[in-house]
Length: 221
Ligand code: E4P
Image 1 (cartoon, rainbow, N blue to C red):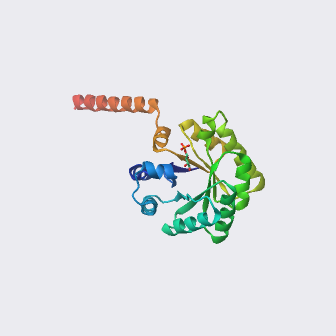
Image 2: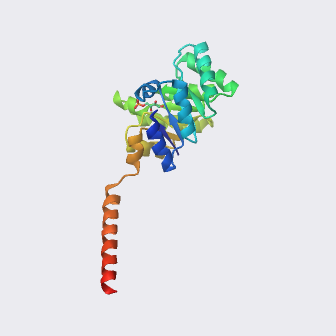
Image 3: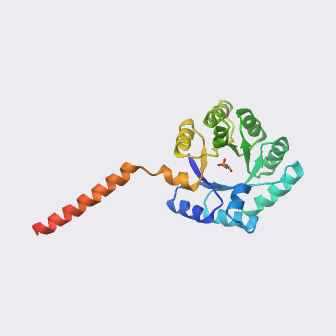
């Protein structure tokens, strides 16, 4: 499973990349705003230079021609850029054309398996079902991801399932068990994944015992 960071914060990306487990980054207009990016394209370029993997950058046009124009500009920024296109009819048309042009896409704002089926038929590189936002409205977000994985396997679609809007480690665990190709998550969730209180307690005990052992050895000499 690939780990993507769902952020536009350069410090977070730098830190996650330094762990050696970062496979990519997803951004959206909200995250770009949160990061206080001065220049959108320049900011995306900087992210691409920090991570060895795909970097999603989203269009803001909602019409076919506008999306194509923005997507082509975004794709020119860096070879790692994957263009995020919203899952609306114009977006599906745009994904089809961009795929034919060799521009990779991440079909975003997916909330149902049938939407995901349409995106795969258009040739999207990634589909992003938003689990957390479905949970927020009393739906089962992870069940949608499970259904998308199954449908894609049934028909051998190449589109990769990018589990998005993941809010906690259990979301990541469930996505992994379901066989999602990618999990994109906030920096805090990535750090939570590697934490366990018994690891901390165990390490403290080992270090204390080691200290005691060294002291005892010194006493013997
Ligand atoms: C991913 O590509 C989305 O931008 C993101 O996961 C949305 O997450 P949120 O629902 O926590 O804003």
